[in-house]
Image (tube, rainbow, N blue to C red; front, side, top):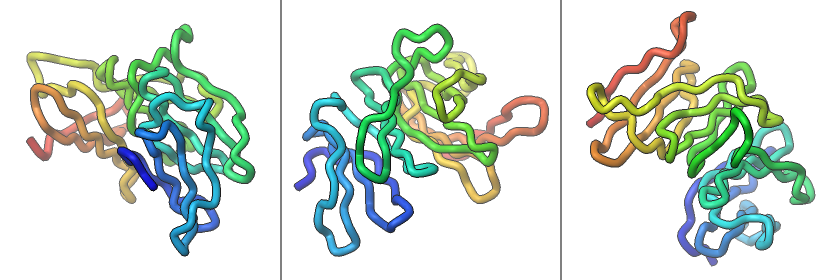
Length: 179
């Protein structure tokens, strides 16, 4: 059924959405356990994480260096952004989440940072660059928004660690809490 499953999300109908990296697709699994929909065997190379937001499914396609967006209703491909774009160059995108302002946050593992984008893919800012002399942010693997509106970012390579980030009104501030 699933081969090398990665990111998961839940749509508005209670379906589980799972990135099936080994089969290069995203599967919608209904509450009774049946596969109700499969997103594009031809549009995805290595789906890593998915996020259902406003009737759209955002999928980080790690090896294509893109975020691809599909309709949550019928599974049709809508648009993509990331690779080779002027400001939005995503290198091995991983975890996806939204912040309280409705921006998309995408871990860009190869760039060692997290990109903040509009839902249409327009670059807003980024944070978490690799700093070898400080806590090693390294490859960003996953990001989630906590109920407090803080972010939790999991990084790996060189150091296995987590960071909890918050916006203090003057930029993003982070604290290491697991190493």
